[in-house]
Image (tube, rainbow, N blue to C red):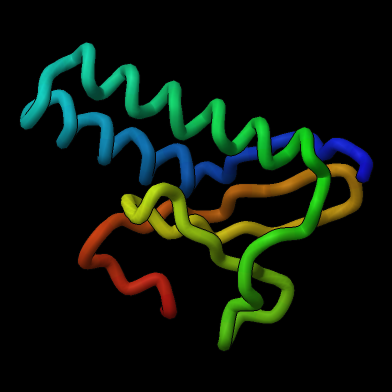
Length: 97
């Protein structure tokens, strides 16, 4: 499979930044930084593998969802040569809308 470039939408960047603020407040800077680094490393590995993974979104054609360690649901779009992270949803957030 051909590796893909990893691209984050502005909304996904905002989602991750909000989670980082919460983690910093609740668990501290070291934990928050490590969590973000692990999420990004995991996403980069997915992009490098090049496969189209996840489940088709039930109401948004062209988008797929998959989970990250039961901690987040990622909404992604696969395009030629890239995987675009559209949104990152966390526990209690409705990713169907």
